[in-house]
Image (cartoon, rainbow, N blue to C red):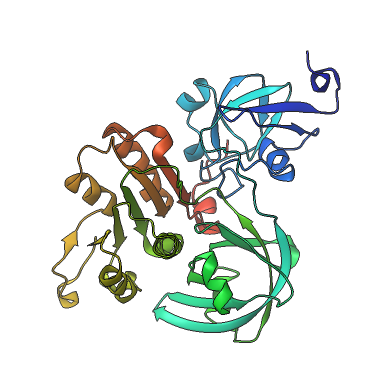
Length: 356
């Protein structure tokens, strides 16, 4: 029996197949313990709402705090799955997650930033550039996100839309922010916020980044501003000269929701391994839309009914990500080849009131 198990103060958590271990303190979630000790567990919202942190419990016992029903179904819980962001250990625990690697996580930092640029990309999407302190190194994987630290202990999370190498050119961090009317933060972005304002951030967070040990073709699936981290992935793949076939499926209700389609078109001319499939679900006659229509995740299956040889990176609205995961696994996608970042807003959490 391990020494950790004999102490009432801490329990040991072992991840397989990586065999990485860490300890958790009383009342500390499994995810928080892992992050504190540099073990990069998968996660997204850290709030029991998105399901990105779901792992299979192979042994041991845990207690769950509150979470959204869509993040962990009763069937999944019966099969032993746990949400590490809201589960605390009551014994030593063994968890299975193939997303946990030996790679060291970048240090998480808090720092002030200056709002360098505000650029409206559509009626409800703002592109921000944040200038970082000149004497503060900031490292992250393309696809990760930062938190804005707001008054009253509130946080808002946004994915970085540019690859890390672009920081060397002094561009700062790029974010794409959609206006959520009534939102405490986005009302400020689209109302009172102005260039040169000082904002506080913390990061990087998230386990959404390119798995470079694979040679499989890649499908990037985005809805709305879920395009932001996928833009960073595309930039990184070009910079790193990764030649794996990549297809970006980007969906919106109206053509204007594909707010940086011109940027994608420019990349197509530079990256022969990149394809782009825009999909619009609710086009009106005045839009003059002649492209694909319907649900963006279904367009993938129309083009590739057998996904057994692919990797999928999906970002955007929770319903899109959840539907894609369900349907793609049925289409043969290996469960450990689906990587997701579900953009769960405060409004989503309130609307889904089914906290368990």
